[in-house]
Image (tube, rainbow, N blue to C red; front, side, top):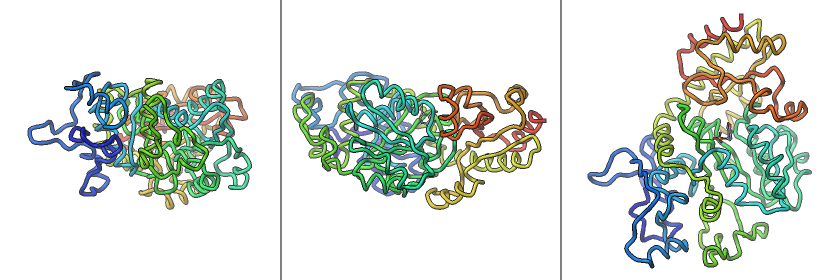
Length: 442
Ligand SMILES: Cc1ncc(COP(=O)(O)O)c(C=O)c1O
């Protein structure tokens, strides 16, 4: 928690820069990163269930309100428990600062809104979570922000043809939900760099345990913390992390280089060279949109992170074994899992920290939609849920649920055939899962 930092400048004191001085390994960061209790203080990140913070003089409050000094003032823009969680997420990703939000949707909205104005354009991989697709394809359009979608496997020159003078962002998901394509980071970051636009990666389904997108040219990373960060299906939340590696002064982003009259004329790119994106997002958009994470959920996410490095390998091992089993089953038409398909394996070898494809796989059942209905009804260990990344195994039929808003063409572009069943493989005994899928299929 940034408690000892109250006399430092706003940038120097953001939780992000309170990095562990010892340069801990990933697992230690999962367990202890971001919160360093002093003598007699709670060992566990405490839940500070307070909207409000007390000050002694009006000048101190003024310095905080005008971004001259960091301090919690009101929990819509920061809170000590939330700051502890943000700091840990930032350490795991290797960014310069993080802000937590009320949901993954709020995280993507916050990140995009922080970059665009009416008239601007966003370029997005077509394999996206359905909510992100509707945000870009429908809702943001009402505010004058348009989006184009590209096949993430298309050659760079084809994707580049979609870049316009007004394009302000290119984005994709590390592992597309539910198409499961692993991003070609080098190709997309190359396009972003060539056009002076930031590259945003939604890392929800991979997590930093598998992939750290800043190492491969991402400038902003977002999360639905609701997924593997929580891991236990208890809480909704999100995170935006700043890579501190984009030049906001390249002429395309005047909101970063001209005075913000709502903060006494602060110029974000000048005052906060490493964390301009994040401080502007927090200062302007958490203030104006709301969308903040509550301390209870930050506490639960923080607890979730403490076992991330133990859960992720098990999710991956179980998913790989279930993928092999389904691949040989006579009632199964096809199986897709990044850990077994050739392109997925190649990208995993290049970009992932472990030879593992996360816990999500998809498959098709031979027969019509009734075969899907029967299969889902018969499951006993796995359950039909609108969720992924839980320790319990869940299944879903995306075409009739999370992606029901898409037409057939959009579904196919998003990598969602009508018979697709998405499985979020949990950490139960794999023998029980295989037996369950076998009896439900046959
Ligand atoms: C990749 C991805 N990003 C964002 C979201 C939205 O997150 P939330 O449900 O926490 O709002 C989801 C939800 O499934 C997702 O899968």
